[in-house]
Length: 337
Image (cartoon, rainbow, N blue to C red; front, side):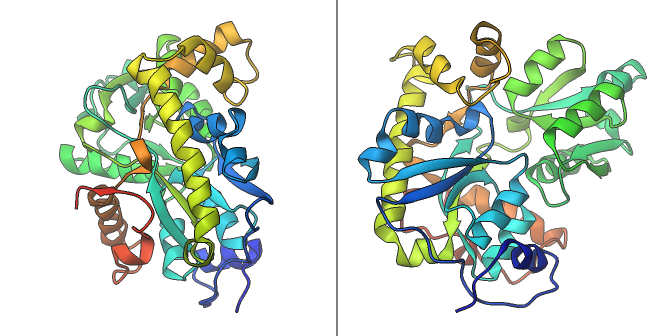
């Protein structure tokens, strides 16, 4: 069996190493495991599961490792540095799945009609120069973290619908994109509402459309793990998902359905999101970030297939990769098939 370290996983993503092994052996149940996350409201299912003891109830001692983009998280799963994670599907993740290193096992953030979601943005500099609509972005710079990221997918789907071309500009990190939008170095972007709304209100950019207008029922993020965990550590993987699902249920009750205390939930989430601000200043942005997290970690496989097909059409991943290569559908309910 070949063990992936971080260097080897990076090499695989560049296509320079051919290997067919699985990630390093996962930690056993009741042992410490690492969970990858971003400091977004949309990752609250995991935060709640830890804070309210749901992971502990499932026999897991969870430690978070925080990232600033999706693709490095996929590398960390493949290398065994992280055991489970929630993030968007990227070209790197798909390529690692094709090498037998990663499996998607559930759904997390999803665009849903009637619930506020991600926004398409135009920088203020571009807006003042007459770029008022998404169609006006034709030929302009559109920010992404990396080629093959969810930002790339969202921009491409919009450009296709509008009949325009975009100059995709990779800036690696969300923070770098925010700075580039503020300074007018890039003209367009898409991002979750808790980042979009406050900076739009401050005049940094303009919200001009909803992502759901162009990609309905978009499965924005997924739960994933190593192929070894999915195949050989079923008890531990089910335990992780059970804790995560309980966190998602609490999140929905407080932040979407209004059947639980929202103030208490915002206070909990603030331990992980906008931690550099006092609670009273962080709360509006945390609330603005509220989007649907899939109940029961259900996975919209039609959306996942659409994303896979787009990556293939762009030549970002091999054309012969199938949905079964990417997804282990045995853990959660699947929809959209």
